Length: 462
Image (cartoon, rainbow, N blue to C red; front, side, top):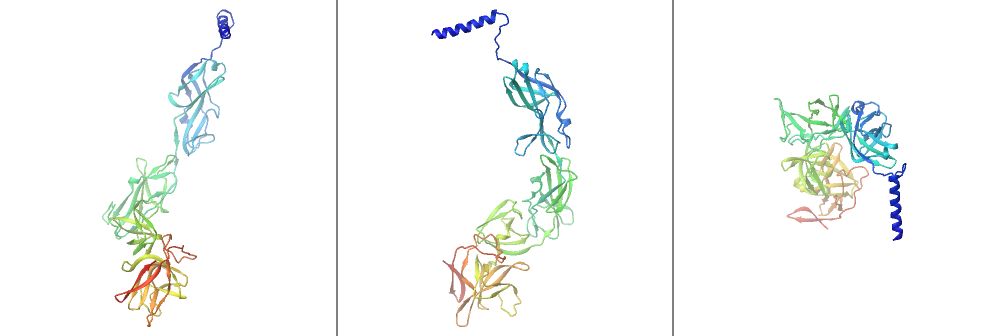
């Protein structure tokens, strides 16, 4: 208790000395806060520009003294936004991107004894409010950092590359899905993509009517500028590698028009060889999914540029040809891989007719080869059983017939394919004749032949 009274008495004595003795003073650390900074000087927008040097600004505080602006780099300098949203101090010359100017307002020396910055201090430069970044109040100095409104330097685009135009297939509705800009700096206005058709009487919109090979067609869409790039009258546009015509609209969008011929296509019946298959709204992987198919599903469609177009619930659906195989609805089976045995080679024929020399021969397979069977047919005229296969011949894929077995005069059966086959669910392509092709192991089934009404049919049982 005595110790506490002594301490209080000592403090009281010091206060009396401060009040009555000349030259004796006690410093307090309560500093006056500065709430407003006004500055004038260089206009940051006049300094900014393409290929100009990133010169510093000269600014002077007119309100808020004794604070001053440290105009030296890097205390005050130009900042450029990085792709991740952060900012970096930059010197050199301006180039396309988003920029701002940062300044450091400072208190130091004797001024810091009496002043500090308020946490919500406001700064105006040439009458325009700049944004507060941070305030640092220390015992020996005080700093307040501000940055200007952001400004963007755009770069005129020399060219734009667009891909994904779906082929025009006779009898199928045209597609606008999947159109993609593959170069940087521009985007497609998705609401602006549409087809035009001319039957000889002028152009008009054609959104869903089936394609007529006797008409002419154009695809039109609008390109928007990017954040740091600008489409203009001198921007060249290439669609699927070909230059197309453009014109700049008053709103700054670039209108693109390209003529698209009706593609040559082949009709066919196809069976799905994969476990599941996306049906898309256009003939490319970027087109939106509109439906799906499963292993063994059969469609009638037209083959064009590696995709098959077919009627999918009233609209044109597109599926990747690599996951399909040719078949015949009248003889279709679930697609399976068979291996050639007991034969040096077998003819692949366009129809199940035996003649010598084989005028209907479209190719051949040899012992050890795998074929993708999509159908089975017993032909009474030749007393032969045939497998229908998707055969990648010299002129593209064709539906071919290869002999499966034959019956001799004594009722014996001679097989040209082994009694097991491999399920293709895990296969990614039906191009089974490619060099070095080795199918993966799958479900092994045994072929059992049974006689019904004097006719052989193929049954599969585990």
